[in-house]
Length: 311
Image (cartoon, rainbow, N blue to C red):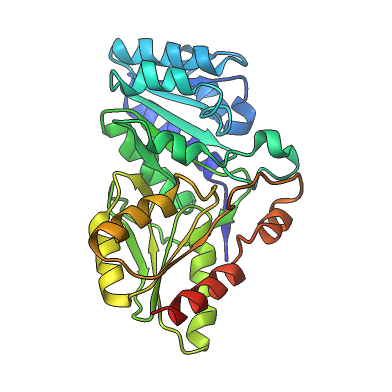
């Protein structure tokens, strides 16, 4: 399966958007070669601002620019763009509902050798807790580009989480991203896998293996965690009677928690969760970490078998 970098796609999409709209400005916290905002900086130096290693200040500057009518993209690593500046996100962006797009790279544990200090595994819980924020985790580079274009045209604060390594391309060219509408990647009647981000490709892989074993598994990509597509979740629960949720995040507050709220309220069915549980990860290569902490296609496969037995 072909692979591409979501962060590189972000950088290239920013140039495209910058050419279309002179009100777009970009901020970075001294990590532009890694977040790929340096593409925009070279093309539009007068509309790029390096805020240094001061993410809190970057959010404040972004708020001021947005209040002046600019469409602001602000970037850093996901860990710094969530945990380090949460108070500023709450006071400066969420409460006034300003038009700032926080696009963070290096999400999850796939930052690899950067280690525990750089692993953003609480970020989705934090951003989903903020009123007014739209929260998106693209499944591949094609979806990332579309999500960034939609964020630029839609008013309000956004959080878009991207990855460090290249990830599999699962969508064809011409894919249409619809904000808040999940994508059913594969139909199935025996169980449903609901995944987000890099776990969508692994869910599709698990579905292939399960099909060969006679288990017909639905796969849903929930790219928008907030607002959540409740209808597709209820439909899956009603039609398959079993759900597995897979995400590169802690158990608390992420996609699994949000899906479970809907299922418990609308259509209770057996559920399993593939995530990091309640623990931080060690340093290591990305694929080794995914295997060590149970974030593989095989882990999804075993969870589907387990939940199917509970039907």
